[in-house]
Length: 229
Image (cartoon, rainbow, N blue to C red; front, side, top):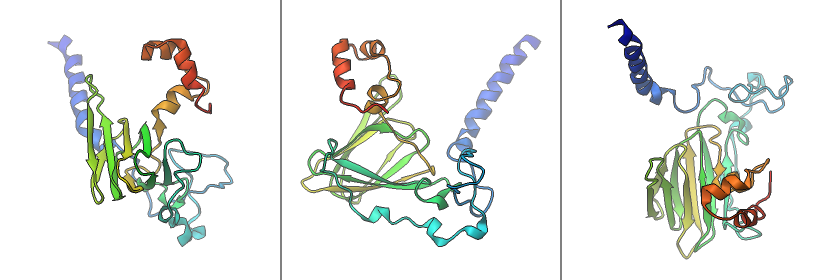
């Protein structure tokens, strides 16, 4: 009977962890009313899961204001995707520090403007179509890798679960605009193509050859189209 105790304890721990997971997800809770990000901290680049706090006496209303979502971005000039993202995260809006939320505006060219497959490792995204018509979709992490997709009209809302690869594409005759909200002050964005073909150091070609079941020349040709970071 005693030999089974570790297994019982392990099973109990797994159950407790699964029940607590929703409480542990997302950004940490704030511990004070405000913690405006201090980009010029005298302590240097100190990062403890966020930014250090500016002294409250130095905080102003401008720390909580960002005008950038009201202006359309250029989706045509030298833009192969036909889309542009304007983010309102803690990196641009210091008052968001420790609040666990952020937003973004995405502009799309008509008929094909695409926000390519990407993921947000630290946030669920809820997308509101303010104008135009978007085809959206995400791929589940199950073995079947199912694509969940539909067309979202103006006024519609769609949710992309945390960490799952997703995309948006304009399918209307007019430019589209979407506003996204995230449950993280800095959700992170990892574009699939950039991660695989534009990383530095580069992902080894032979690894990608096996992953995509193509020859090395094809992989090298794709890599040549991405700016290595």
